[in-house]
Image 1 (cartoon, rainbow, N blue to C red):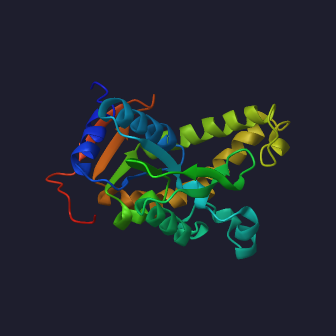
Image 2 (cartoon, one colour):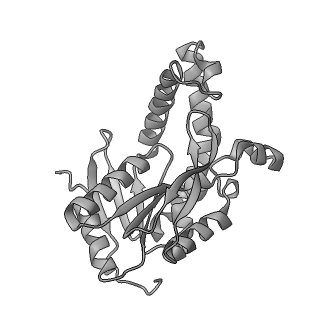
Length: 243
């Protein structure tokens, strides 16, 4: 099957947005390492190039509680689970953006594995792509919800590959999280990555991420090489009056 690309999703956004003047919010979710950030950036670029919109991407990872707060809460090992996010901060951000305000928000640094406060300024835009494992938990605030799907074995494979890549980057870029693993054997590092997947990311996927798939307006299915296999729009999906 030919890769349909993101054209159908961009067209659906344009159809849904119509003549609205406030920010149209697209929520994009999927498992860890499914490629959400890349798809979000590509979708924003498609909306700019093909439809003339302004568009910006924001990751919900920026609204994770800082590691110090997670440790104090006793949930540092559950980072990425629903309770590890500042939900109120996400809602305030979305409300401010819809109201036409410019707002400064934190980002999550994958090298330090922690939050950097005030690192990103977001101005009102035609379309915001809000991506993250928990993005569809804010469905009442979304104008379009998208789920990025792939079989669990592929997600595991991609997660392990990404983890090895981040360790390599840490050889030239200081990383409190990956530095202790730089001299570890590949075998030991692989064991750590597999444990992280099985003890953290897989339970999160099964218990909290995948159950939101049926609520998505659109499901994008990916192949091993990250090409898009299909773009499935929920049958007879109409604007349901959320916004």
